[in-house]
Amino acid sequence: MKAYRLKSVTYRDFKSKIDKILKNIPALGKLLTSLFGVSEYYILEFFRKLDKKFGFYTMGFVNRYILRGRWGGRVLPLNINIDLNTKFSTSQEILEILKRSNVAAIGLCYCRSTQRKYDKPNCDHPIYSCIHLGVGKSLYDVPYKSYNLKKVSKKEIEDLLLESDRRGLIHQLIYFPNPQFYYVVCNCCPCCCVVLNKFIKYGAPQMIKSDFVAKTNLDKCINCGTCETWCYFGSRYLKNEELKFNSQKCFGCGICVSKCPNQAISLIQKEELIEL
Image (cartoon, rainbow, N blue to C red; front, top):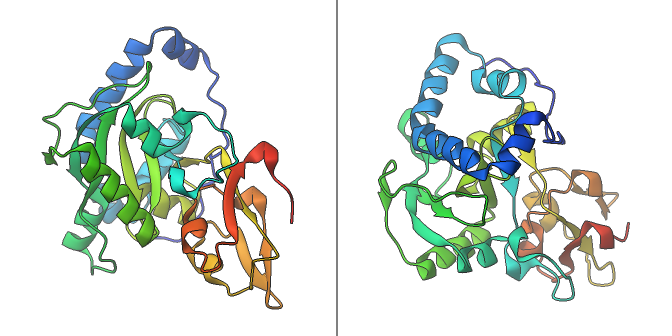
């Protein structure tokens, strides 16, 4: 595939007439989300074939210039990675969402299964890792008969999330037609995930930050560089053997929190950020 850069649409505000209609008529958003969710496998497969034929990231082009960022991922951290003293809305992170959701099933990850089918495998993360569920007043329930689903308990879902966190995977709500309507929770790796991989490489499709940001306790930090290794967004790096942190690049995923050997990192709400 050709090397090029699509301008990022990460920070777009969804305040158009369409979004006002979706807010006033959430059933419409649920319908659109349901249709896209059921069809996602076939949509992604169609664009994969176009990419292979023309050597161009066509889905990124469509998402930026036609969908205008209406398909993408919204990063959410696990409860266990958030500072105990931080006050937050339960709608902002995954385990609380699961507790008040009707979990449908775990689905086959299109990204990893496709990567292993057509390319040389370069990760050992689980294939069945996409969590289909419905939460909130304006969000919809994914149909049970969607592509390659298997029904599981909430406990199994929580175990999958904890294992994904251990593996350093990014938890994302995959949404359409705007971030208020999502159809799946994905546990994404930068090597395979269509959303995460293409965002890191080209700035598209859209990724939205969580409402949290990492904070480092410099008294505990030993400048080991472990967090730099696990930060896929480049917000943490060592310079002259000293940790540097760019809060503007932090997506608040919480992976650095779980990977820090000295427990020097926590997630706080952005309003509470103390610059290093």
